[in-house]
Image 1: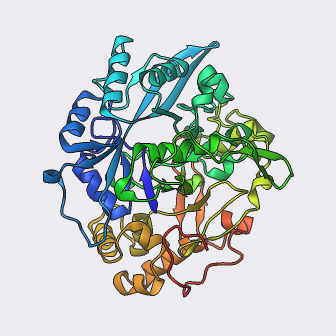
Image 2: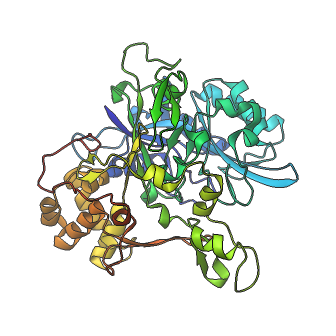
Length: 489
C-alpha cells in the first residue's frame, strides 16, 4: 500500500514558523493534503516534546493521536495521519580551516531514544530551549557518533544537501563528499534529502549517492506548505505501520551489492535487495516508490547570483563570467545548479533519458532502477493564478477546501481527478491550470541568492524545462482510466 510521507517539518517552537504548526493543525492539514505520515519535527525542544507525549501514543515507533484528541474526519475514506519522531539539528563548527554549517535530520524509533539523545546533547552544552531547530557546536561527525551510540536504529539524514549556507554539499560552508563531512560515520548515512532547489535527476549525477536513497520532504514552516515535497513509500498495511518499515524502505537498498544497474553510458552502479530490517510478518520488502517534487527552479538558491545587484547566472554563464558580481565586485552566492556541476561525475545528458510512466494523470521521470519522481505546482498556487487572487486569500482558501473535500485531498486533485470534474467544482480556468501543470506547460524564473523562483502557468510561448528535455512527448490522455495516485502504468 502506498504511503505519502513528509518527514521534515517544524513546530511553532522553531524560529520563523507559523504558530499554527501544532499537532492538531498539522494532522488536519495532512488530511487535506493527502499525507499519511508526518515528521513531528523539533523533538529536541522541551515544550514541544511535552506536547508530543501528551497528545500522541507510541506503537512500534509510529505515533498516533490519542483517542480523545482525534479530529472528526473531513471525509469518508481518509486515512488518519500518523507521525514519526523527527528533528533537524544545525551543527556550526570549524573544521579544516573553514566555518562549517551543516543541517541534519534525525529520525528516532521511540521517545526513549529521543530522551537519551537529548540528555547527551545537554551534557555537551547544547542549548535546546531557544529554538526548535537547535544550533549546536558539535561537528557532523560528533553528532553522528552521539546519535548512533544512543540508539543504533536512529537514522541521520543530511538535510537539503545543496543549500549554499547550511548543508552537506553547500558552496559556502559544506564539504565535497559525505566521507569528508562524516568520516567513519559516512557508512551509516543511508539517505540524503534533496531540498527544494534540487531534484532527483540532479542528485543522480553524484556517484557517491548511487547506493543511497534520495528523499524529498517539504521543510514546511506553515501548514499550507506541508507536502510541497514528499516521499511515497510502499509499506504493506498502513494501519499496521512500524518505524522499522520506514527504516527498511530507506536502508534496504544498501545491504547487498551484487545486483548491477547500467546507465546510458554503460557504467555499473551498485544496488542491493536485502535488508537487516526485514518485516518479520511478511516477505514484502518496504521500499521507496517515488518522490513528489517542487520545481527546483522555484527554490531560492537554484541559480548563482547576487540579490542586491539583481544578478542571476546559469551554470554556463558562471563558467564564462566567474563567481564575482559584475556590478559590485563581491562574491556571488554559488547556486545549487553550479555546485552540482562542480561535484558531478555524470553529465545531465547521461541521466536525462529515462522511463516516463504514468502517475495518475501525469508522467513520472525515472532513470535506470532509481525510484521515479513527479514535479508538481501546489494547488493553492494554481488557484491563485487561475482566480487572480493572492495565495492566502479567502477566495483561494475556499476553492482549495471545496476541491479537497470533494475529491479527497490535494494530491488526488493534482494527480488523479479528471479535468472535467475539476471544472464542475472550480470552473474551467482552474481545470485548465491543473491540466497545464500535468503537461509541464509552465514557465519558471529560477531563484537565486535567497530569492524564490516564480512559476507562471499563463505566460509566453517560452519552452518549459520539460519540453526542452522531451519529458512530455507522449502525454497521458485525460480520458484514460482511473489509477491509484502513484500506480505505474
